[in-house]
Amino acid sequence: MLESLQNEQVKLVVSLQRRKVREETQLYVIEGWRFVEDAVLRNAPIKKVYVSLKREQPEWQSLFEGLVARNIPFEEADERVLRKMSATEEPQGILAVVHQTKYAWSDVHIDKKSVLLILDGIQDPGNLGTILRTALAAGVRYVCLTAGTVDVYNPKVLRSTMGALFSLVLLSGLSPDDVMNFCQKQGLRVLVGDTEGQSLYRTDLSAGPFALVVGNEGNGPSLMFRSPDVQRVTIPMAQEVESLNVGIATGILLYDMVRQRDFL
Image (cartoon, rainbow, N blue to C red; front, side, top):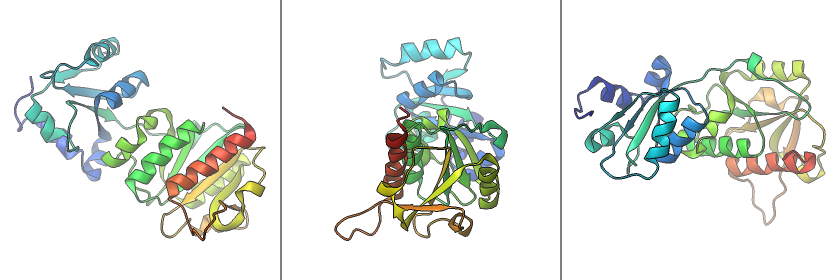
């Protein structure tokens, strides 16, 4: 059992709360029974699981079988140690260290039904996590994050994704130029959410493939995504409401694509 707060494993997990360390080690931490179970079920590259069995957990037996079947190392830890390693106020008694998965443009395979979601400078961790979860539910497979977007492995982002991270192909740290070059080469019709664009309800989204750009909460999208090659689309709003939360807006845009194309 892991009992010492000075143990090197404990120090590593604690240090992974910092982005610099996550980038150096290419590791990150997930917490909670449901999150760890989902990681196992979706074949996430788990390095090790730490668990407290002091309180009887009905989820443990099935999770234990999954860990054994996949040869994933796990170790029982004292609750005090787990609290030290945790980034949440009320730890559930289980966490896992996971290897980051790196993707390249060669992993993005476009067909006529594809929607490439481009997140340009999204800053709020909760917004990013919600967008990723919504994107997966709407049938999106590929997501690009431009440089300046909040770290996808930020603990608050991870909690908001509810496991969606394990089923998306994520390319991060990209420049808008690179993203637009890829879209043009692949023949993607690029749309951007813009309050001065054409009404979503009058926009034909029945034929793809598409790229949807969602810009920074305060400043909107980069100049590259405001070029004449990009079609601006707006969500009509009543009662003098000027704008919507970026996560809500993204969900509306994606699901209108789903409605018009009848994917799901």
